[in-house]
View (cartoon, rainbow, N blue to C red):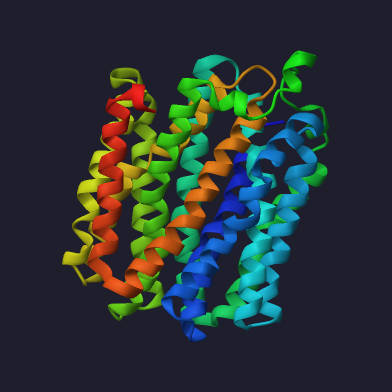
Length: 380
């Protein structure tokens, strides 16, 4: 299968997924949900994926990538239709759960597919870097589309428009018959019965999982809390979408040069740079209320956070035992969804109790701690 078709599938699905994260937060505010409830609502994206991510990875290794990608894309489309049909808060909870559950099966499979279609270490670096660029493009367009659509057509109708994107992915997968033959290279029979704990015994793999999870807190807090903070500052949905998209624009820029950065300084140095810049930038958010200044700070944050996740995916695929790449990527999804679930719950509670500044300061300290952990690999 042509790798560019894979990237088109990623673009459509992630545009809808990222847009829905902005849409669900602003729709919940419109329906009168308090901040803590919004935190639990966003966390619903990750409750079931947390339980199913490892299974999704094993399923991908066993069945191949086509079925998980097809069912996952269709499930995301169905989840986006629920708030359009039933514009009430319970439907938002159901939508978040269905989108999150469906997305994890698609996501593990497509990451595995990018690795399968890569030839050698250089090919993996190039393809995962390009995958990261497509993800950044989706993160740029998704919030913009959601914000402007809300202002023009309303919250419920915006869900309908977003649902069209994963339908495109479904059609591509249906007609891509070559996907049936693509799966991870088989490992020996004895290794297949070893459970996921053996993956955690792999120190370099474990360290990458931990570091990737810490980097993700920086991205997750921004995507969850910026709509809340922007709404409190009186920004329109369109302005909030622009601020969030500036983060993605910076991620796109930094991922263009990420392969050169890794070649020059190495993976750990790039991780440390990412975490340190993110920690410093989070301290700046409480100082500004203007959309223009918030967009500028968001761009700087995106430069720091932008290369962490594609680099983690590349390293996990490289460091996984033969034939268990899907399982290792599924384990990464478990770590990621723990982060996805914890960030809105913990920081939503902190924000409700203590206000805005402690939320940003706490995440800054967490990212700084991650940088210290990377510098001390023996502790990971």
